[in-house]
Length: 437
Image 1 (spheres, rainbow, N blue to C red):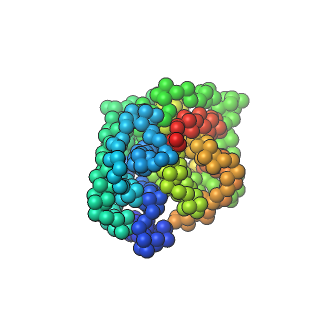
Image 2: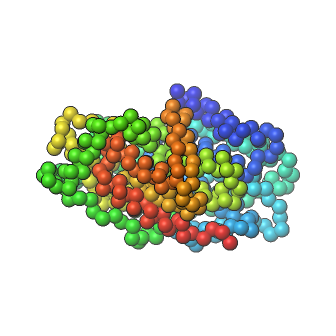
Image 3: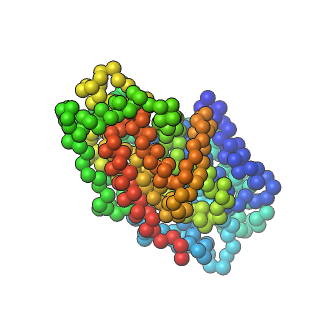
């Protein structure tokens, strides 16, 4: 199934554009959507692409696209000096002609080729096929000198962004992100995380150092840390026990719609676009539906991707600060040894909820752009047979994404509610970026 899916990835990425590339040169905003859609597809087929890793790639890709367009825009200003460690991108030659479709195709394909160097052979073939199709679609009707100049410039921007990415702490992923026993030791005690499955590789938690990575818009010393979770206790009168009991009772009495919500937002690695990809998928649908022009399109994708990447860094810092036991472990030990969750428990500690932090950040940024009460359909799971869901606002979607983790049986309420607040705090730094002149 996976081979068949990846073999047609290039065709899918173009087909969803409605075939416009065949009639005339592809517009640059369509190029950005096509390559971003390809990254969604590659993400679910590349083993190292856990949610934090996916968020990092979306951020660098979207910032590269933004900088490539901003350099030739009279509306946008550079993010250099605003994002941590980002220096000025190469400048366009004064008075010379460039084609933004060609520039974007070159920039984005170069970033993706590096970021997905470890994807499998079918992914590589899909990437090469889409590159060939998009090169033809973007160069149609453009003079040879403009093509050459635009390609040279696009490659220079990609090199600049990739060089910036090299020393952020997340560039090298070994063993799919799981440490060895020489690198990490489990903390003893009943309150701390222990493995929740028998997979050998997952007996130690995922990416324990990710919280120390260089952030993007959020200052390294930002004060977005949530309050501590309730103190661990096995006393039935304690707050901790009550929160665990809520998870237990909720999962045992789920309505059909709550079950559907848990599965809709499950976003498991290798089975989906992952949580940051889910929000990118939402944005791609809005961009296409509302025919968002290029300057606004690159701004939206850059802002949300940056907020998501910072959200996962901040969340992972919190996770490894508290190293809290998962509901599955606690409930089996203290309440009901036969209890099981509805969805898979991820292989890392509980507090705070990554879905909640990421969704809080994304909703804040998108609301700042589109306003509250902005209705949209989320078709993210349609290819996997999941019915689309309708939302009246981004905050409503974020709340549902966060609560889906309670329904799934994998998070306590404190991780959900404090995670949403943590995400909003982190997202505020991205909202503060100056992108428009």
